[in-house]
Amino acid sequence: MTFGDLLLAVYDDLNFQPAPSAAVIARVKRYCNEGIRTVLGEPGMTRLLDSDTPATFVTVADQPRYVLNEVVATIHAITERTNNRTLSSMPLGQYRRWDSDPADHTGLSTHYVQLGTVAVATQPAAACELFVKSTAAETPTAYVEGTITGGYTRTASVAMTGVTAVSLSTAITSFIEVTDFYLSANAVGTVTLHSVSGLGTELARITIGAKRPRYTGLLLWPTPSAVYTYTVDYRRELVELVQDTDMPPGPTDFHYLLAAYARMREYEKSGDARYPAAQAQYLKGLSRLKYAVQTGPDELPVVGRDRLIGLSRLGSWTPVDTYTRGY
Image (cartoon, rainbow, N blue to C red; front, side, top):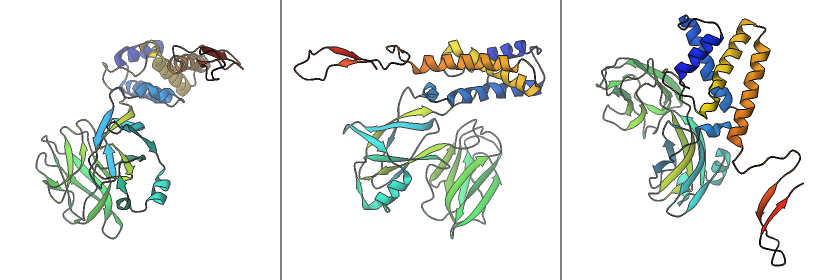
């Protein structure tokens, strides 16, 4: 079902007109997107957003920090296929205990540290002034939050002038770290943040239609000593339903769950006596969706039993055959 189909179904079930008030439309749309996030928040359900084609990134000798593009929400696995190596995840605290100075140990990386969402792809190489520009003739206000020399927090903003680079603040020329970068309105073109000048190093990029850049940061250990290509399996960042032609993630047979969730939330808001029945219908559908997504085609669940089928590993005195064990 498309987003438009879901909305019409909800309007009809709740006895709204096909074109209800703007407030009702906004609320029902919010409920549908809230329903997606609620489903994905269930244990094991994030696999609905698992990547199809892995992402890749290329290392630079002696550089420990890297970022993945905004489509990446959570890293599942990182592999280096030339040397057939799979990297293990590592907590940041352990990384610091093992290597307080990343430059001390270099080589072919064996571990990675996921840093979560970071504001910029690259931090300034030295204290500098910051500039912003776009590929389109747009004039939103750009904002930057960061740290200047001495460890002080500063905020700067400026009205953009389209393709012409403009300084975030001519009075602040010592930014050493950027902690946030965003716009007052969705970008019309590709908006970029630069150090030193409009032609300086690109620190971050806001894509068309977005207000903020979203990067997933990570550290590699040991620090790469050469150029290596890494492949990343990941969970995609959820893109909310906006256009009527958008479709929710997951099996189409269960798209009705979003309409059920929206009805339930509307009944809850209005104190309608039908809320318990709507909640029961939603939870029943959610249970069936979880079973459909999390149960493989070769699984046969049996209550109270663990059914294991595999090749015998009991030695030469037993037949090389399959065995079944249950308890």
